[in-house]
Figure 1 (cartoon, rainbow, N blue to C red):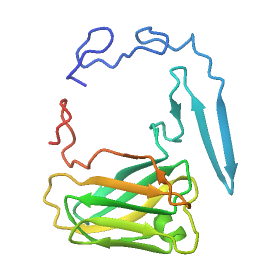
Figure 2 (cartoon, helix red, strand yellow):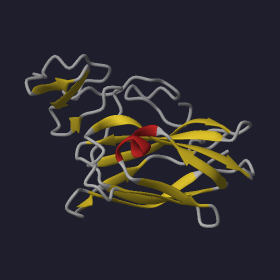
Figure 3 (cartoon, rainbow, N blue to C red):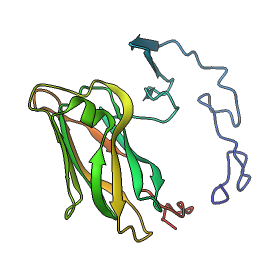
Figure 4 (cartoon, rainbow, N blue to C red):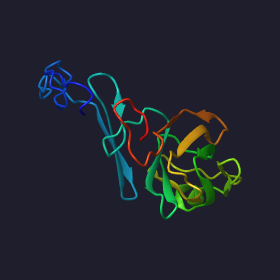
Length: 193
């Protein structure tokens, strides 16, 4: 990153302070003791507490500090396809959110179609909705929530907004939304393009 100096003061450098406060250190002062592994049906989920008290429950190293984390993945603007990826620490019985920046032409597949009774969308508003009328829930874990096809992408951004997820008792789940899709990437100030 050319926009900021690293901990040695080198612009564009990649040295960072470790949890012990040592620039480019190796965390020798850290004891990683709270590791939890859960599994079943050929799936193992690891979670752990770090020395700063935060947790990491995503197998790919990205942080998810909410009950539900959503991200836009595998965007192919020429083909008009993308995936909505979900990591959830709680079972999900229903959801709604808006996907803006293009016109949705279909939603299909993923864990939403596998576990819920209804998955639908509104082309005019960009709302995607999933619900269970039979008591089904998407079990905790991670994977593609739904596959989306779209048209009318103008090359700007595709963003998620106003996400509401609920458990089987209609209790609200805390949701964290990932960054908008930006075809040109983000600059140093976090601006698309």
